[in-house]
Every structure is written in C-alpha cells, then in structure tokens.
Length: 295
Ligand code: HSE
Image (cartoon, rainbow, N blue to C red; front, side, top):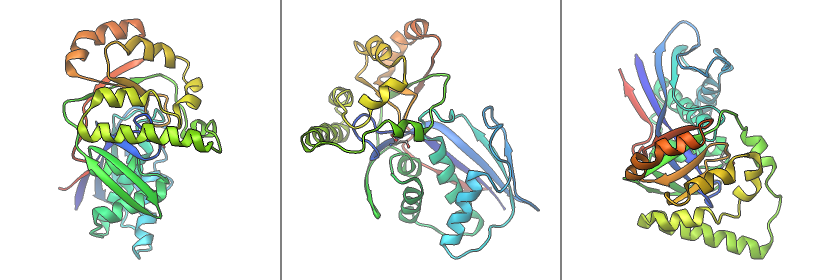
C-alpha cells in the first residue's frame, strides 16, 4: 500500500497569541510513503540535504513514538519521499509539519484510526504548545489552550493575504525563546492579556484592521525578540501605511504582513525593490489542514 500525506505550514502567535494562536498557510511538506525492505527517507527539495535519511529522521522518531503510545513496538519498514516548499528554521512551522507528518505516518502504516482529538493531543504534547501543530492538523486559524488537555476553537479565514517576508538567515526557536523573560508583573500581564483578548475577538469577527493594531501592541514576545531581527523596525515602517499590521511569524525570523490581494498587486514590486535582500512571499490561508490519501 502507498499513501500521500500533505501537511500545511503555519504561522504562530499572530502578535499577542503567544503559544496559543496559529494559522495554516498554503506551503506544504508532502510525504509519499511506500512499504519497503528497510527504512529510507528520500529528500526531493532543496534545503533538506542535512536531514537524517534513516531512523534518526524526526518524522520516523515521531511515528515510532505514536506507534509505542498506541501499543505497537515497531513500524512496518517504508520508503518515504519528502518534498517541501517550507523554509526551515524561519518561523513557518516546519518542525510542526514533521510532527504532524510522523503521527499521520504511524496512523497509516498501523491503521490506528486515530481521531482528530487523539492527533491534536499527541502533537501538542510533543511540541509543548498547540499554535503550530493544531492549524497544521485542522487548517484555518486555531486558538488553543493546553494544560494536560487541549481546548480549541477553529476559525476559517478567507480573502486575506499573509505576506511572508523571509530573511536569508535562520533562527532556532530555542534561541528565540531564550531572550524571553522568566516572569511578568501582574499589571503588565493584565495589559498583555487584554491585547490578546481583543486580537481573538478581531479574528472571530474578521476585523483585520483591529487585529493589525493589536498585533503591534503585543507584550508577550515581540518586544524581546525584535533585537534578533535587524530589519524589524525598517520593515514595519515600510509597510505600515498599506497593510493591516505586521508581526513576527512564530519565533521568527520571518515577518508577516496581513494585507489584501489588491494591496499586493499595487505595492509588492515597490517593496521588493526597497528591501531586495528579503524573500517576499504572498500566501493564502489553507483552511483544510493535513490531507492523507491512500493510493
Ligand atoms: N509560539 C512559539 C514561539 C512558536 O513563539 O516560540 C514556535 O515554536
């Protein structure tokens, strides 16, 4: 038997929704799975050269962990062809796609019949927070709270362009989390949560202007992380007249501007010319989530 597993990329936080809000985007990790005599991961895209191609591969590790959790000691040996257009270590959820891909891989090979709830709980427990894995699984925007169990709301998003502005350097999540404070004073946390609360309401009502305003008032992570992104203020200032708002995608270094197709058609070439060292990539929201097809 063969399967095709297609997992969308994600952007997390969307400003103040730190570790709790994420959106699936139309970039994908695709896995073509065929049963074989030994485990083999075959890279088909640039940037995958350094990934382990045997049982050290993260996708295999997650698949084995899933198998073990559901009472299976081993996985049937397989050949997995990997194709991806998601830049690695850029804040677009590439490791979350590997986690979701690994869970789906075990689900197919062992016919586990995992429910969406099972997959969400498992993926979030592995990642530690739901903001990338949940939208990769469900599609659209997911607002989640994780504390032993996951509570979540899924909101589809239409007619909005997420303009990803991707630098050539990588930033590891561990490094970007190391600059965050250990503690937060009571008064500031009340302010910070009010920004996040209004952000959620704005997402649910499709009030992008308000969401844009809120995302630039985040207290939780952007004020600490912006020093890791040398062009942060220059980019926000370049875009601010024309877009709803700009935020740091996940742990960065990619930044994303919320905007419309009309603005992209009118301004993208000018922006690219102003900051040509960055890769400008307009993306639509993927409202469907992971797709697994038996072939
Ligand atoms: N919410 C996470 C962060 C996303 O900002 O660190 C990356 O794992």
